[in-house]
Image (tube, rainbow, N blue to C red; front, top):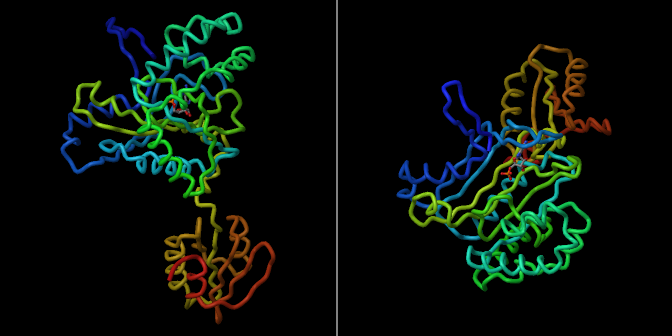
Length: 344
Ligand code: AMP
């Protein structure tokens, strides 16, 4: 917690994360009375009093999304796919996934794990040993080789899930599989906060070093009630903006080509404007643009190059479609250009 005394001696604490404040506001603003589920998102500064290092700051920015009021696995899968889409512009992204079951299963498992670890205490690192009673699950996070060797053999929470929780997890996985999303089931994935139930997940980037997490989250079916509301299931994630930028975010979340529209006959200028507008609305184009400064044909092609256009559509006496990488150019009707990129 980022806690400090202000000038008049009041103790202030800055918010470390968003989920715990969304839950009471869901009740306070009567969102529990709306048709469920309710989907919300947020963005803003957050604060943690951790030792700063590369990728870890005391003030950072998070974007987050939450779905409250349903425990359907489809909500979990939808949110994971949303975050995957957001992170598509980052380098070397991988996803780890697990399920923590319900509070009861986890309580029993915690005791089992603690007793199991006690028996091999001598092989564990000092910080892990010190926290054995408080939170033995955090031992899975340790980067101490001795501890890691022990944890590889430790009993797994995933093997202790109730039938209902196991079926929930299987359904989340089936939905992600059918969407073609790759992930690793990691029984050692333990999110830092105690309020998670069932699904937990974390996206990481291989280019980030020690602070590799780009974003993550999970299900928190007991949290709204814990904070004074009616029993309400929920699931959500938060992602770090600075980390996303450090992971080489290219902004190419769609990944489609860029298209430039050049005007060779001034009478087709208005049409060019319209074609750009329609290209921007197509599924398979990442960006479309045209010249706004009356450049010559040569100048327009240069500008297309500068903007990194993959294709240029030339509107003159005919309509030409030029592949900027190969230089190939052929006649193509505007309607066919639009169709090529998913419109019409
Ligand atoms: P968490 O709630 O800890 O899972 O945080 C969600 C995301 O926020 C992480 O995956 C990071 O990308 C980012 N984040 C968390 N703590 C920090 C920090 N101290 N500095 C920068 N980014 C952070």
